[in-house]
Image (cartoon, rainbow, N blue to C red; front, side):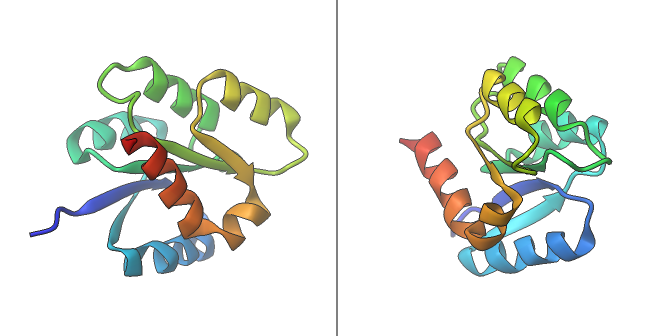
Length: 127
């Protein structure tokens, strides 16, 4: 029996979330939504996701704080993080890279290559 591949997704925009789900589900991924910063650590530890997707511009979750939490926790730092942000937000991109993000792309690139990007970060983490 194949194990469930859970992806935690911090995206509050329901239409964008649905687009992500529609890209990941046929490839065997199950999505679990993150609704807040507090939700992140608890779900990351209990669900053992194969990856986490973060919208760095989402108001419901502080993307920079989420990255700090993940990358500083010995139990969680191995989980690959794929994030997207508005391309003009240079500080967000710089900070994400400093914190050790696995991959950050523009919203447009994420939208056009959703599944490929996820598989890229999960493959990098397993090799």
